[in-house]
Amino acid sequence: MSDSASHLGRDIRRARAQGLSAIARRQEDRLADIVAHARATSPYYRELYRGLPERVADPALLPVTDKKKLMASFDDWVSDREITYEKVSAFADDPELIGHRFLGKHMVATTSGTSGRRGLFLLDDGYMAVTSALTSRALTTWLGPAGVLRATARGGRFAQLVATGGHYAGFAGYSRMIREGGWRAKLIRAFSVHTPMAELVARLNAYRPAVVIGYASTIMLLAAEQEAGRLRIDPLLVEPAGETMTTGDTDRIAAAFGARVGTVYGATECAYLSYGCAEGWYHVNSDWAVVEPVDAEYRPTPPGEFSHTVLVSNLANRVQPFLRYDLGDSVLVRPEPCPCGNLLPAVRVQGRAGDVLTFPDGHGGNVSLAPLAFGTLFDRTPGVEMFQIEQTARTTLRVRLLPAAGADPDSVWEAARRELSRLLTDNHLGGVTIERAEEPPRQAPGGKYRTVIPLA
Image (cartoon, rainbow, N blue to C red; front, side):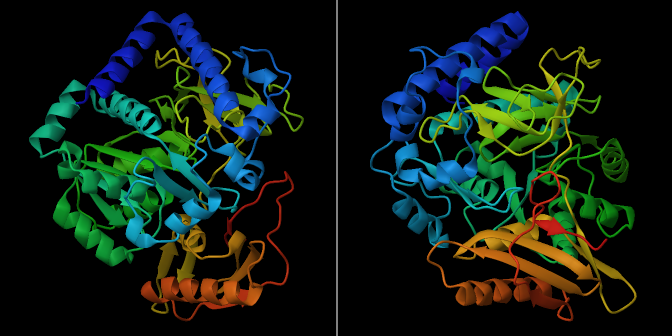
């Protein structure tokens, strides 16, 4: 373990041991520091924060940002004047560069997220180190000392279910780890969520991982395979991520695999945001992140009530600061201490429910595809600004696209249709009809976009 990682680990343990006042001090100091850094290095934030006090330790003083605003001001947003949208976009469009460092420094991650709008993000070494330290702490908490020893005795094999073929955070991070080596590269193997289910099951059966980490809806599909007896693995820990899980979902996963289930709530913009406890709550790592549930006017939502959205401040990533960033999820803060004993703020999340699409296979059975398979497909299709897929009949998909500025709509549609047809064919669903919608993606009544809408 590097000196930096050891220092982070010690500081995290010390903050937890010292209690909420120590965590609050760290949050205030780190917020003030990254706000000062943003003002000094980012023209966007310098202008946005004009007129604010010299030291800002209260996030409520800061204006709200979101993906659309930041992406529109990309060149002014970043803290390094050598970085431009044109350079990063060209880098992200080249699959041969997955796992390489942009400018020899930063990881590039693309995401459509829950909004369906493409994000192009730079993640620096400080952010990656904090993510690693907090992830290691969560894994140790979930497994316990005995579980860590059992996982080690079984070779410590991790199966990471990732979207491949693009600069997605999970796959880009894995590819970078493999390129740069180290002990983690020997323990973790990536499995593509785009792999047809029968093949994915066979590969996991051969690998027999001690820990399975991946997109929640894909893990739910694997739980069904385990229940049916086709998947035969015995992990100690299963970690579903990226989508909201109900207690029924986690209970089913635990029963199917005979394993402990550890859940996380985060995003590419702040991967280490929180981790779940046995009581079904997500505990916010508030020494390194600020979470503000707010109403539609960005006023604080009282504990015990679901918010309209949530504002997140990442206190680690300095190359591209995410400060008071509208993540778009509805969250509820637990009004009293959590029975699990963790003193960190506890939240529940109403947004980001995964929408699995299920189709008849023509032989009396069904084939199910996780939403990540569609999201990453459109994310890597050049010229797509926003997308939405709606299953309007059992074998019909209606696709709504908003092309990026300057892109030819017909060319974008043809590229997207080819990719979608390939995905369906690979999963033996060549009979599914793909319709091109004339209308753009539609908002839900609450003003948010669902990128994947199953058959009603």
